[in-house]
Structures are given as C-alpha cells and as structure tokens.
Amino acid sequence: MSLLTLDRVSVAYDHQLILKDFSLDIEKGQLLSLLGPSGCGKTTTLRLIAGFLEAKDGKFLFGGKDYTRVPVNKRNFGFVFQSYALFPHLCVYDNVAFGLRLRKVKDDEIKKRVLHILDTVRMIGFEKRFPEELSGGQRQRVAIARALVIEPDLLLFDEPLSNLDANLRVDMRVEIRRIQQELGITTVYVSHDQEECFSISDQVAIMNKGNIEQLDKPSTIFKYPTTEFVAKFIGFNNFLLFESRNSENGEIHLTLKGHTFSASQHMGTNNPKALKGAFRPDDLMLFEVDGEDRENSILGLIKVSTYLGRSYQYVVETEFGEFTVNKEMDRPYLSGQRINLIFPKDKMVLVE
Image (cartoon, rainbow, N blue to C red; front, side):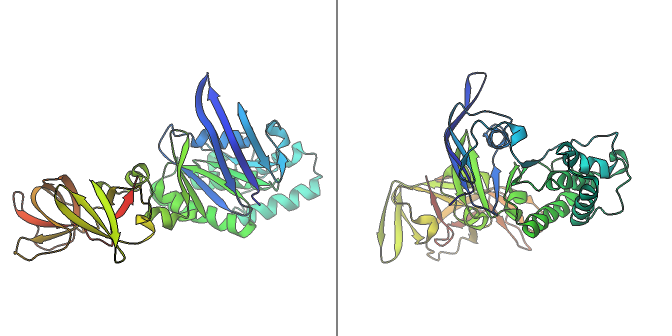
C-alpha cells in the first residue's frame, strides 16, 4: 500500500489549470523525484503535497488518511527550500531548534535532537555560527537539518541545489542520498537537472504540461524512454518515423520509404503502437563508404564536424533528414565526405 497518494487532483492558478486529474503513488521509504522543464507542474505538485496549495478536485491521501483539507501547519512534513530560508539573525543551533521550540519541546530534548541531527548532516562544531558565516553547501546542510529535526513523516525538496556551484552540487546530492537512506525517510524531490535526479532517486517521474509522461526507475527511463518527449528530454535527439512494423523471428522489422530496418526485441521496443525510432548520438555508427552491405545502413554526407575533446560530433545529412553522431577517432571525417550511417538494431528504442 502506498504511503502517499494523489488521486485525480486538479490545481489551478488564477483559473488556469496546472494539474488536471493528476495521480501519483509513493511507497514508504522511497525517494521519488519530479523532473521536467519549467512550467511542467512539478513545483505545483510539491506545493500541493506540502499544503501551500489546495486541490480544486480530487484527493490527497497520506498514511491512509485524507489530507486534502489538512492545513500546512497540521502536516508533519519537512520542507527544504531552494533559497535555504534560514533566519539570518539566528545562529545554526537556533535555526535548527526553531521548529522544536514552536512545538513546545523541552530544552534538554531540543539539545539532544539538534546535536544529533547536526552530527547526521556533518555540521557539529558550527552551532554558534550565523548563516552569513557559512558557505552555500553548509547553509543547505543546516536547512536539511532544520527540516529533519522535527522528525517529519515526509521530506520535501524544492530545487535545493540550484544555487550551488557544479562541484558542490555533486557533493551535496551524495549527502542528501546518504541522509535519506540512513534515516529511511520518504522523500519527494523536485529538480530540472536530469543527472541530479537520476543519481539519487529510487523512482523518477518525468512531467510535461501537468502530466506524468513516464514513471520508473532512473536506469529504465535512461535506457528505455516510452515517449518522444521523454526521449528528447534525456538526450535521444535522432528520430526515424517509420511507416509500418511487424515482428518475425524475435526481431521487429520497420519500413520507411522502401527501406527496411530491424530492431531487437527488448523493453524499449515492446509497445506495438510505437513507430518512431529514437537513438542517442553516441549510439549511431559511421563507416567510410566501402561497398560492404551493413544492416540498417544508409548513405550520408558529413555536413558539420565539431571537436568535443574526447570525440568528434558530426551532423550527417541523409535522405531521411539530419542526424547527430558522436564518434571517438584520431582522424576525423571531413565536411562534405560521404559515409555510411548505421542505426544499430540493439540500440533502437521505439517511442510514441
């Protein structure tokens, strides 16, 4: 049974519907990320769960109880904001203790819990410092400690790493995952950063225009997107729209303008309605024109060659359009050179 359920909820801003008949289930102890471009509805979903917004229709169930109309101050949820939202006039200890004092917890219990959670986020020794004396990463640790010290039933993150530099973001996402697993706390995490979400999550929901396009394990989404939107969002930028498909001898055969292409049977080709083949730039192959007949091969012309450091990136012009290919090589192909472009059957993913 799910710990958290959004059952066909709808949310509107100024009469504009952001979420419509939106449903989501989250298991206890799971870290689920809501991922998508700006305006997709991920922050609205988080704010609805937190209690900052009220559903127009539908139900929000938590722990088997109806939370749809429960006010934010009655939900024992911890919220970590993008801007840290620390009190500048309070030291680290008092910032973390603030929620406990509101709950009338005794001073000796406050001290015990504050020091324990500061140890968990590795901020022991910083109790008397003020926010302006801390680095961005340290402020975020304090914000996490403040959210955790109340022993919340649910932990919510709203783009918590977007204000940090690249190296610090990597360190902090490791820390967030460590803390979440150590405490076993159910967590909802919002970000627009694919790598960030994939690295820390048990499940990822890719959102688009208020809907979940795909909800699955990060590794499954990365390998096998189910829709064109998800494929583009995670780096598949080469597509072939086929005219028909049929299965035979464990393979899928697809036709396009008199050409026949083959695709291997795997999780990413199971949908019988999907007719669009998707490929990452790293998965396409290039060969010099040598007269050899290769499967899923078409002729192409190198239009643009760009040096990327470890590899070269080529824009290849073909009768089916332009394709982007990344290839490691010592001697690059030249603009204007004719080549064979291969669409490996085991790398093809079919999407709607």
